[in-house]
Image (cartoon, rainbow, N blue to C red; front, top):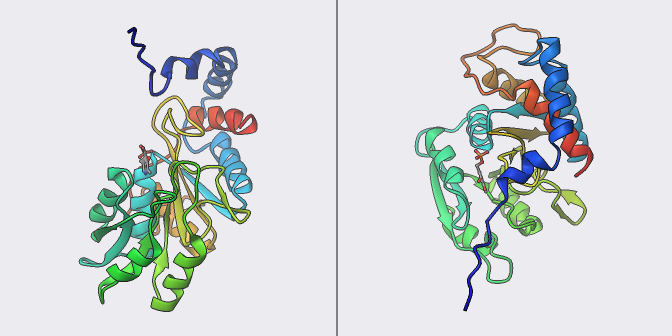
Amino acid sequence: MTTKTVPFFEYPRLWKDDRDDFLSIIDNVSSTGGFILQQAVFDFENELAEYAETNYSIGVGNATDGMEIFLEAIGINNGDEIIISSHTMLATASAIKVAGGIPIPVDIKDDDNLICPSAIENAITENTVGIMPTQLNGRVCDMDSIKMIADKKSLFIVEDAAQALGSRYKGQHAGTFGLASDISFFPAKVLGCLGDAGGILVKDKDLYHKMYQIHDHGRDLDGEVKRWGRNSRLDNIQAAILSFKLKNL
Ligand SMILES: Cc1ncc(COP(=O)(O)O)c(C=O)c1O
């Protein structure tokens, strides 16, 4: 019997398939000297928000940062519990932990391997503040049931949509059901770039500004420092590459 190793993802093809376009994008962006927070980033953020049919997007360093940033902007207190799927990536839980909360993993449904609404209901305690379903494998969770539970118990919804760009539930794009969501542009993702990168999707203007400030040292769009923040910015070369790839997605 012969065996053949099938690669999980052919990383070199990411470069090879579009090499000439990438070289000209890198040359164009680099020639202008605009490497950080310049037009290519703003263009991509607008294109991503438009693609996902939401109001705003923010380019960040990676999807994990995106989750930490939106949780910080929403405001998590020590001991706050957030219910997540037990079938997800480590980052879903670690982002909650880093933001000061407690991740509570619950079971998945047999038919789609996504978070189970009745398991969510059973896990709610007086410390539960939110639900963070992971949209996975090209599918979107049962958002009608999850929204019903969240409304009944006054919980917020945020989504880990790192792998879910382009997935829809009853016509609505993954990542647009709650206060905010993260999208990953890790090379092997639906829209992969040439390194680490991520995006946040958000509808509310005030939350958008808070998250924008947190991702750029506390500075708002006008450069005014409004709070303590960090540096988790999408760089211009990756943004221009993502714009190119999004057009062909
Ligand atoms: C479901 C899920 N959430 C979060 C992440 C983290 O994304 P990133 O590597 O961009 O931080 C991943 C990446 O594998 C993921 O699959």
